[in-house]
Amino acid sequence: MGAGDGDTVVAAARAGDESAFAVLVERHRGELRVHCYRMLGSFDEAEDLTQETFLRAWKSLGGFEGRSTLRTWLYRIATNACLDVLDGRAHRVLPRHLAGPSNPSDPSAALPPRTDIAWLQPFPDRLWEPVAPSESEPDSMAVTRETIELAFLAAIQHLPPRQRAALILRDVLGWPAKQTAALLEGSVASVNSALQRARTTLREHLPERRLDWAPSAEPTARELTVLRRYMDAMERADLTAVADLLAEDVRTEMPPWPMWLRGRDAVVAALAESWDTGSPDYVGRFRMVPTRANRQPAVATYVRRLGEPAYNAFGISVLRIEDDRIVEAVAFHDPSLFAAFALPAMLPPVRR
Image (cartoon, rainbow, N blue to C red; front, side):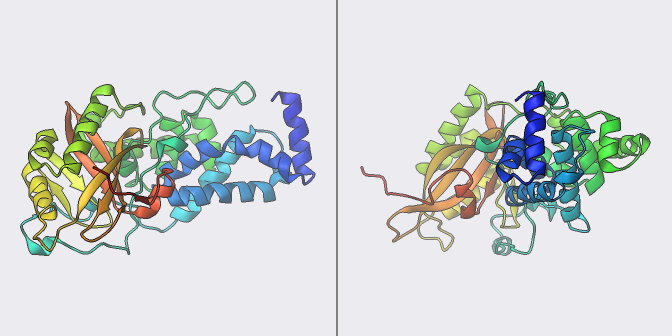
């Protein structure tokens, strides 16, 4: 769409043409959804805030004078909407942010799920759209450090809202300091100060090997091989095969359960209990479906419990793999997430 065509559509939208407004904003939906997800750490809230952004934009379209691009204007609205939501609210967490690792042999470690906590959520890759350069909107530059890796998302949740916004706009999206300051209605000096504080905090919470966080990328062939072996071992309930795929210091988390495990022995012990048909903690048999989340290897888990005819949605696991070993697995036990990943809520039994 050329500049002249764009002006025509803007004029039509200002005149009350909702279809013209949709043409203007819908092409930005994907990147605004990701922006809201980074700000909030919640896929569900990102969906809601993207809609809220469009609603606010529609109501205030008459005030859009074209001094900035439409994209910049929408980012301003989205960022402020997210800041409104974050104002005075506790940040989203993973189980490791609440307490130390659990001991699977301790009965008191089996704490019930916590529904009173705002948990971090995964993001389905099928809805991830990297920012691409646009001739009509030169501020939509391609950014080499754009990321939605889970470790990065967990780390930036520790930042105060305005520091979080400054870091995302400057270091993730590559916005100039002056443009970021204008969006946040502050000075360049205040934005630079917030950015430096944010970078310091980020280094404290990123994994040691990821202090210089990298851009999001497709999982490698080697990572996918590990993923396939992991899926097969889990479906066969093969403890030895699973153990062989885990790093010695592996960390596993299962929100909304507040406990988490550190170390291969602890993880294997917990799996042994959950796969023991004589144990009260027996979970059932698994079926695994590969999926894509946060630009990392991921798998959707379905479980068939005793007496049940089918496999029901259980959780979305996001893996971090290094040196052909799983070093982290976060299993989000929330069946409502499966719809966002375009996955069914149930799988039929396997016919042998």
